[in-house]
Image (tube, rainbow, N blue to C red; front, top):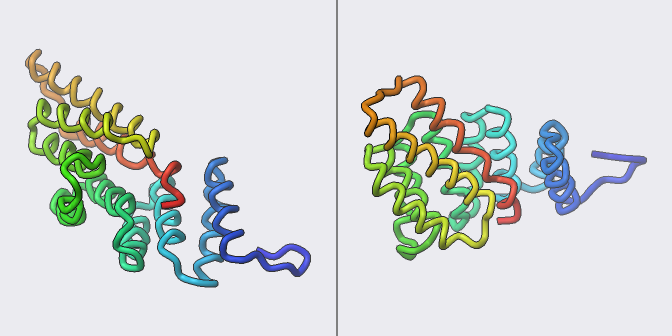
Amino acid sequence: MEATGVTLDHEELFHLALQASSKGDHDKAIRYLKEGLAISPSAKFYYILGAQHAEIGMYERAVEEMTKALELDDTMDTARFQLGLLKMTMNDVEGARGTWSLLDEKDEGEPLRLFKTSILEAVSGDFVEALDIAQRGIDANNENPALNVDMNNLVERWKASLETEAGGIVSTEAEDEANTNHFFLSAYKDEKND
């Protein structure tokens, strides 16, 4: 973006995008990110652009951008985790499982590995195991408080599902999908400098 003939550099655009995002100004954040990508393709720009598109419900575009981020930097584990969550949100369990497969190479106590494992356990219907694994991930995660909040929300949903099962109440597929999709995409804000 130009003001009085002065062009912003790559880092300025990135920080302005983060600031706009933190204020919920997705329009401005997306503009800054796209301008930065026009200057130089960057994994962190694609990652945050994907996060912005996810936050406004443009999941397919978000998947493309997270994928590009990983193509440029395959060590971005947070982007890999979030891409898997996006695929889960889009009901692509096998796609999420494939995306997350590289997280299996991480230490067994690594939070992202524990979180993805807990989600897959819940999807398979084993909420007891999912709760145990998710709690271990929350306890181990000291780097991303927003993700812990999201995982705690998921834990509460899983506990409610267990109580529902114990009470003999069966929820509808639409209710399950709405409850699941609600939690997958709000942990981006603390990971923008990954």
